[in-house]
Length: 66
Image (cartoon, rainbow, N blue to C red):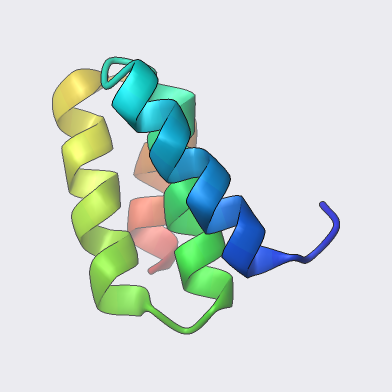
């Protein structure tokens, strides 16, 4: 929300190290990467997140938006 995408990416990656099953962490990482113009990596992160939670409406929407 502060638009500090580099820190947001770092925080989301740390979050996923602590809990790789936390789907919202994938969403936050992918959104931050998207804002940084890293679309290919954001798509890969969304795919990994959907493996964790295939029913996540937010991840599915982001996947279609990318």
